[in-house]
Length: 504
Image (cartoon, rainbow, N blue to C red; front, side, top):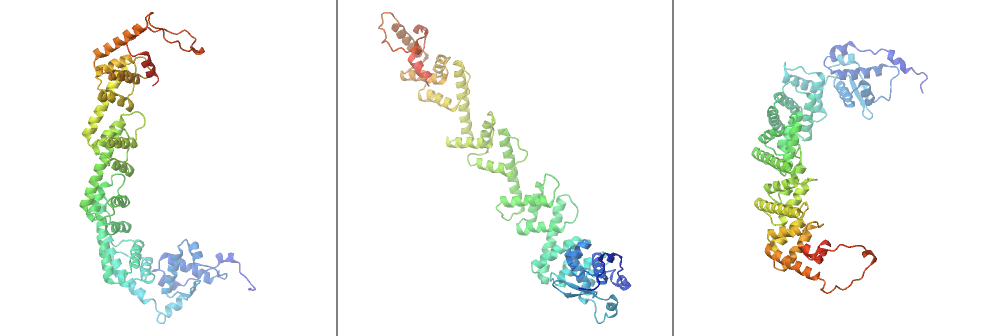
């Protein structure tokens, strides 16, 4: 424990001595952030209350920098022989005398490798661009930290100048440097191959931008996307340009195009696609979209966007019938009252297939027959004094009367007249027609004769000299005045037949 301790708040009022040699010899070429790190560290070395627990993170927070930027700055000053690293874990740096470094250059020369690299880098740009110190240092980091050969880094910079111009961003170029490192590119031949591919991708990406109506150079991210489309996904360059026509909503962009190409790749089974394949696939999808819209319109369903879900439903419908049959089913569902859904269209198609209907003409004939049956059933109901909406069971009755029993239409209307004021006229008619069928009655004359015969039998049974019917047991509920029916006034089935019909 020291005997005396300084007031740390007094540090703000102390003075940090900065040699003029630093200002004249080192500061002009150094990046701004690197100067900030040097001055901050120099302040702590000269203060009487030096903070022994100071870390890189503390310095980064105090200067509003990233921790890696602080470490990079200290490595820069190491190369300048103004800072020496004396310990690695935790890191410990010693600030050296600027004056002694200048005086003893011969004994402790600057980093000659760095100086040669910087000179070669400046030569690439010449008078076209003045590099900042931090750009030169960042480029040299690719040699020291990523382990790339100096020749490959300089070749990469030359490649970026030729493809993106002298004003390219060194921060974006770092992505390419990392890619070179990850792919273990350590030979001139491997680098030339990668740069050749990259140059082709850059030119292809620029064509895509022109197709979008954007006359600028592609960014590194856009070039990377182009590489993904052509190398990983197998799209031909012309195929990518053809896909640009699908960017119809909003501002065209590489991100928008990426989604379109991803969809094309997925729907094609992730196969390599040429321009002709893409154009054919896009044409087929446009036709499918138009057919789905026609189906939805016929069904009375409004849809602004035809999504993949509707496409899948439509493709499922095609397993039960062609597009024309789908439209017929959609029109039938659309004419209904209440819920109109695509599930109803599919169910109708399935029912037609179960009935053996395999062509649009067969479906039309079937629908025409249904319409004719419904029209006749409505007319019969009107003859019976009722309004009705024909059901499947009603049509089955009509089919039995006409096809199995061969009842002519005039007899159907006659039976309907007899079914007036009944709760279920069609079922009442079925009993009447069954009676006529059993007796072989097929004409109106025969039906009238049969009714006259029944009327005569009823009158005979009502005469006074006719035998009295067997008395039946009377219950209390039947002790009320009842109406007597005159059989002569009734021209129709017997009372027993009427009672049986009402039970149905």
